[in-house]
Length: 109
Image 1 (cartoon, helix red, strand yellow):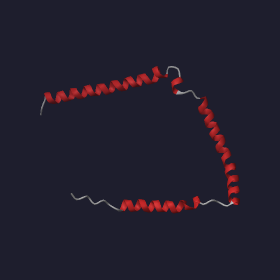
Image 2 (cartoon, rainbow, N blue to C red):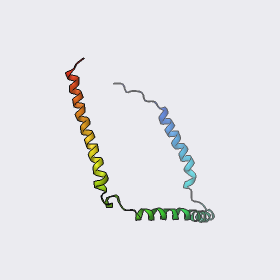
Image 3 (tube, rainbow, N blue to C red):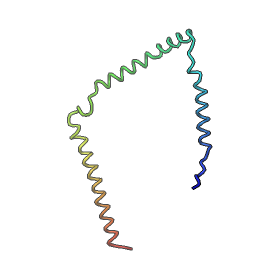
Image 4 (cartoon, one colour):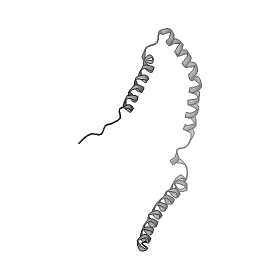
C-alpha cells in the first residue's frame, strides 16, 4: 500500500512562523538591569492604578448580583417554559417526519 504524499509547505510555514516568534520573544527572556527594573516598577505601579480600581469596581458589582438560582421563580418563569416548548417542538418534528415518510410510501411516484 502506497502512502499518500502530504504537502510539506504548511509544515514549513508553521516552522518558519515558530522561529520568527521565537526570535521576536528572545529579548523578553533576558533579565533587565537594576535601573531599568526600578523604572519599570514605577511605570507599572502608576499604570495599574486605574486598572486596579476598574477591577475592584467590576468585582463589587458581581458580588452584589444575585446568582441565577437564587432569583425567585426563575425556574418556573423562564427555564421550564422554554424547556417544555423545545421538547414539544423536537417531538412534534419527529412525529411530522414519520407522517411525511408514511405519506411518501402511500403515494409513490
